[in-house]
Amino acid sequence: MGDSYISGEAGRWLGNSDTSSGSRDGTDRAYVNGGYDPTVVYGPTYASGCDRSDTAEVNGAAGLTDSHFNIACSGATTADVFRAVDGGQTYKGEAPQADQLAQIAASNDVKTIVLSIGGNDLGFSSVITKCVEDYEVWYSYCNPSQQQVIASALPGAMANVGKSVDEINAAMAADGYAAGSYRIILQSYPSPIPRSSENRYPESGWSRTNNGGCPFWNGDSDWARDTLIPEISSALRNVANAKGVQFLDLQNAFQGHETCAASAQLATATQPPSAATSEWARFLTTGASQGTMQESFHPNAYGQAALGRCLALIYAQPTGDFTCDNTPGTDASGMTLTALP
Image 1 (tube, rainbow, N blue to C red):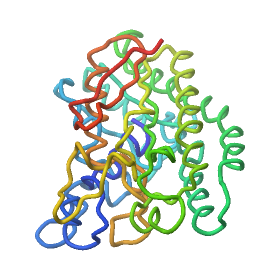
Image 2 (image 1 turned 30 degrees about the vertical axis):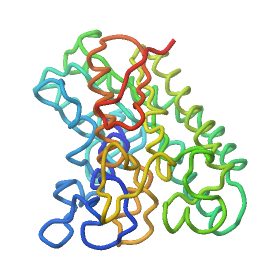
Image 3 (image 1 turned 90 degrees about the vertical axis):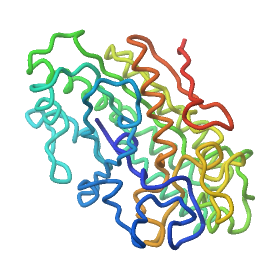
C-alpha cells in the first residue's frame, strides 16, 4: 500500500543508459517488437499513472504467502490511504486504499500489510524539482529553503502517516480481524542520489545533467543524502514505534548503486546492464525519448528487486525494527537485514 516507491514506479528500466533509441542498450524492458509498450511492465495501471510494475517490491519478495496484492499508486498521499468515511479520497480513478484493503481482507486471510507513504505529503518531488532548477538555472543551493519546507511539513505529514496506520487497522477491524492477527510494516525511502564524494561526475560542467541525469550541487547532494533522507527515516520510525508496527529502514539500501554513484555505471552497447554494476535508481528524465518524467529518481527494476529482497527478509522476522543494506558489488541477493537498536 502507499505511493510510488512501493507501487513499482520506474520498474520499466534495468539501470540507465545515455542511448535514447532502440532498447537503450538493453535497459528498456518496454522495448518489444521494435517499438515501446510500457503496458508490458505496468499493465493497465500505466493508463492511470499508478504504474504498478511487474517488478514491484511485493512481486519480487520470495517466500511470501501464495497470494499478494499491490494497491499502491504512484503519487499517492496519506489522504489516498484513509477510508472514505474518514476523509479518504478517490485517486486516479481508484477508491481509497484502506477501502480497497477492506475488500481484499474480506475474502482473503491477510497476514502482512506493507506501507510506504508520507513522501508526497512532504512534497518530495517538488523539493527535487527545486534542487534541479537551482543547479541548472539559478546556480544557487536549494537546501536552505527546502530544509525549511520539510521542517514545516514534517509534523503534519507524520501525523497523517500515523492516521494511515489507524485507518488500516480500522479497515481490518471492520472485517473482523483481531488485533495481533496480522502485522503492518512501515518502510522508509532509499536515497536515489549519492553523496558528493561518491559522485562519478564533477560538480562543474554539464556531465551531471547530460550524462548522469543527476543535476545537483555537491552541497545539495550531501544535504539530501545525509540530512533529508535520514530525517524522514527517523520520523517514520517514530510513527511506527508510536503505532506499534514494524519499521523497515531503507535509507542506505541503494548505497553505491544510486544515480551517478562512482561505484556504478551506465549501460553501453559493449557493457550491458547488470544488477551488480548498474544504477538502481532511475535518472532524471525530461523528454519522451527516455520514458516519463514521473519515473525519475525512483527504484528501477534492479532497485525494486533489492527492496523485494528486503521485504522477504523482514517477512521472516515477525517482530522488531530493521535496516536493510546491500553488499557492494552484488545484486539483490546481497541485501542484508540488521536489527535496529
